[in-house]
Length: 115
Image (tube, rainbow, N blue to C red; front, side, top):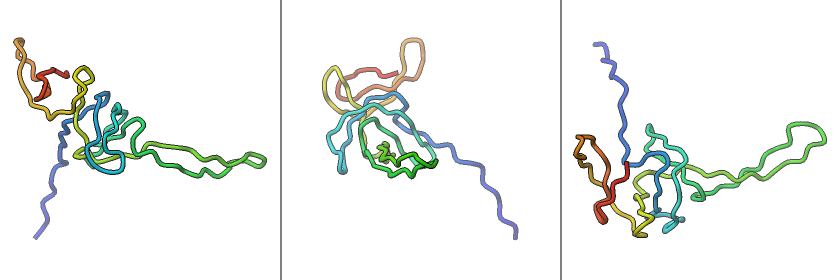
C-alpha cells in the first residue's frame, strides 16, 4: 500500500503582525508589546520586549571582540491576548462583518474593531 501524500496545512492565527498584545502566562506575564513577526507553522509570535534572550556571539575576524547580543525569542500564540490601548484591557476576539460586508476582528470586551 502506498501512503497518500497530504496537502500542506494552512494555519490560521488570531494575531497578526503589528497587533498590540498582552502576555497572559509565563515568565513575562503582564507585559504589553507589539508583534514584530508571526510564525504560523508553529503557532508562535515574536513580541518586542518580551522573552528577551542573550546570545554570546564569537568574533568573526582577528582583532574583533565578541559580543553579547539580545534577541526576542518567539512565544506561543496561546499565551498572548490582544490588547486595547484605549481601554487598557486585554480581550478575546470575535469576527464580525462591517456594513460593506468585510470580515473584521473585534475585541469582545470593548467592541473595538482592530482591522
